[in-house]
Length: 354
Ligand code: PMP
Image 1 (cartoon, rainbow, N blue to C red):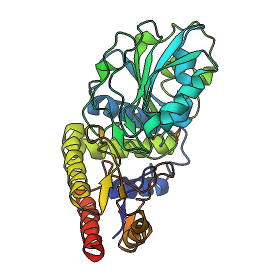
Image 2 (image 1 turned 180 degrees about the vertical axis):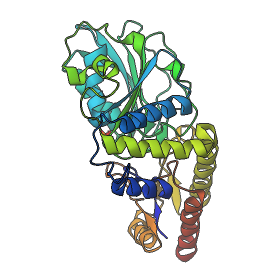
Image 3 (image 1 turned 135 degrees about the vertical axis):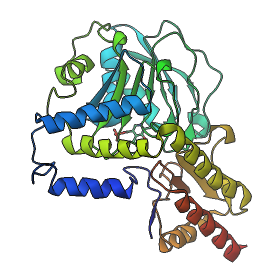
């Protein structure tokens, strides 16, 4: 049995893989999901259901649109300022990692980014807390979960200006109050579905105010008006996202999965803190429930531990090259039994090496 702790694209439920595989062979009357037009009523039904599931699972209030786009979260780094930043205005960003940094870089094409705070000096091992957000900024942007460093923000900074959040790696993992945000975006390939799809949830009233002329494909309004079908959408990715969100709903929704995610994270961090061979890399209060980063007290044991893990069915725990050590990603679809398997492995390894 393999346990997939990969950071993304990552584990999805086995039943979703089976249903997706079946739809590749026969989605409707012997036709594959890969060969039908996106304009068929069947696929329109898929988009409608996926949108309904996103709204239901996150309790999205009225006045927000849900969009299924392409280009990954990385294209959102540019689409956000392109659509929301008026000429000559500044946008405020919290710098909590490489992804936040890449988002900041994209602003320069359109205007100025103001970094309200950064934890770069400490290699992003914590979330900055004491900062103020200038009220004359066009919007405030933050990354809720820093996939590479294993830090997560569980509350939304208070401000009166529009709040934009890159929620790529913790969307659908915990209950959020969407009304506290004006725009949420996420590459789908963690808790939503396969790569190739980007989900955007945007409060309609913030759009159309930048005064910029935006190319059609990069204009949120065009995609809202087109019902995410302005051009050919990522048909298969949306279909698999629908299956995965159905699975999440059948599990009791986001509130239920959050309980499991808390239990999984607690089990793993408890072992990291208890086991003398390992130590966590982040400030305890900012520890992510999705990406658990840790190193070994003796770096020379890291290679043997990784080998031991791989030999015993633990996949994908090598840390990102900019942090080193290990990163165990424990997304929604990873069962707690996989976390127990990793904890047991850490204990067995410690027995051999202490
Ligand atoms: N933001 C975060 C928090 C991410 O984890 C990632 C990718 N892992 C990205 C942005 C970039 O997403 P994409 O590859 O979909 O452009």
